Length: 432
Image (cartoon, rainbow, N blue to C red; front, side, top):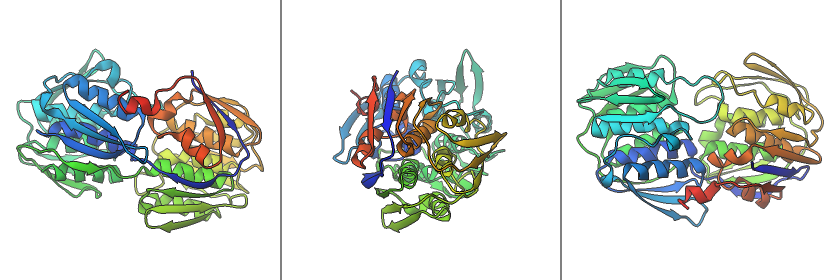
């Protein structure tokens, strides 16, 4: 079991580079199987989810060539011409939620698919009913049995699909399936997240006809084939937001490079409301804080609202604020499971359903805590950096799923932390 030992109370200073966007990577990598030639994906983050997805594709018969980039990320060339299997490896597939995107991809390319029911972080109910509803509307026969989703279709036919709830996963799933379907598919009440747009940009570069990504209505005109494409993954705004919040929590001065400031607007606005100085300039932001933040209210919403993935670290910042903050979580009901661990460090947080009432304290103190999910691990890491004394975080191994070389990057900002125990991290992501 890996642990992170954090010696807190040190101001973060310097510059750090955000890697490629995790949620884009796990959508674009399987999309490369829709092509009949090789694709080259640049600025991929060196994280475990990329490594697991690479293994999934190789098990299906694809040939992959990873190349480390000078900035710490990855370029991955994917040649799908050897893919013949339509059954995803169950052990690998259960290790990440996004493996279910292979359902739409294999169904569109080969007319049949089998993938395990998705894994990933336990942050509450994450139903896949909108995925199945949409695939059925396109003409697929879908069933769940023996822990797997199985789908078959003689031919996918374009149609209009209204998503009952805004679902990023279902939006991406249906975009992938509809790309090679006959006719026109219209997805209404679609998710608007930047990684939906990023996927559309890759698909269009490969010859697809996707319009409206970034709005709530996406139109896909099916094509008969896709060629390979070269595509650079957009920066990860959740990784960037985590470093921004950590800078504010430690009263530091940090420049976060390789960002799209527009994607960070909700986090930037709340930091500024809390009294933190945030400067934007091209592809970087600078965060400075020299005093306790002010209490603010936060409500998570689908993009372009405040991101649920940044809520847990931001709640740590609010636990140090002057006054009482109210945090409302509307996306995932399990996002407050880390609060009991934060209380060990001296926070005063009361959870009532999907709302947390956060009474700010002047200081946190180090303690032994355990992380419950990916973003909770990031939150506890931020808390440890801001706390007095030493914090020991267990269950930290899965930080590698979504944060590229987090320990090294934080050390580069002056943090004092050490990792104990084994972890796959960038080695697995690079295919080693």
